[in-house]
Image 1 (cartoon, rainbow, N blue to C red):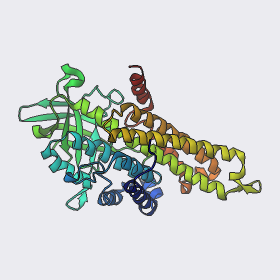
Image 2 (cartoon, rainbow, N blue to C red):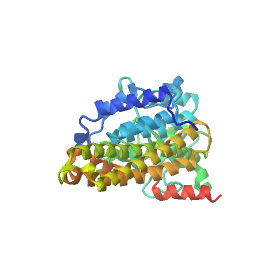
Image 3 (cartoon, rainbow, N blue to C red):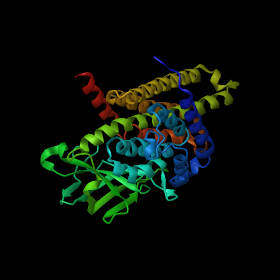
Image 4 (cartoon, one colour):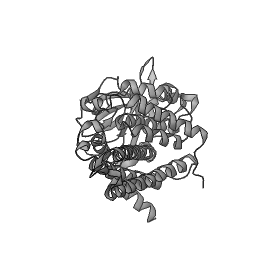
Length: 384
């Protein structure tokens, strides 16, 4: 059992930390308040190779392992979870799915610019369209229809809660082709945002990760070429579930980063804030909070790294990724809440950052599979 990181992994971690502190930290409060999408930051991440970290270099990616991805996600999320969720969706859901299951032609046309985060000098990222008004946790209940018209599919339907919804150039869309087959009648398609019939709905006014753009997307008689179907006919639901299993590692890492960022700010504050004649870090009540925060964060980190390692080894990581996500997300919520408590009244105002982290933490318990869904996955695995 090896706990040491390689030299390359340490370099990735440092590069992500430097980017977070030097590029993401300035303006993070304003982006949150104004719900301003961090386009320039995402493009810079692409230049660093952080938008297609696990993609084959032949298709514009960095060819890195999942452990490196976890390390980078944690560092970015310590500062700005809105930036990290854009990075996560593009890496874990869009690029990984295409890298694993796309054809050579699909990879050349779509994956290469997605992995670089840009095309012709402009932003080029993707979004993953699974959730619907009546298909959230029950992802098999797809109401979007892709009717086989011979040379193409005719796509109609609505998707909800889509991260990168307006900023993405490419959508990976799950839709039902044969309802009589249930989940085995679902297909996955590559759909370009610019195609006729694609409509982006209003931006959601969210509690947290407010700088990331979340929209509903509707499709009205959108013609999707047969060449844009991912995998064999009926592969869509399997594609979505396999892709989401890896995506949970990304969200677990995001939650870990939020927790670690809130803890580091609390530790710094406890060393300088005085109460009753001494720094509050000398009070046992604060010491115990910090001890519990550090312990839970380290446990969450080990779960994330183990799941990433299993994925890199080609092992079944479904159970471990669900364990990492449910524990890291609940740790993030708990740690961020305690961070606000440690900061007292200052924790309730925006300039000290922890109130934003508490708001950002909550979504990690909900998207890419709620905590309840993760427990379903885990219980099924251990009861086999």
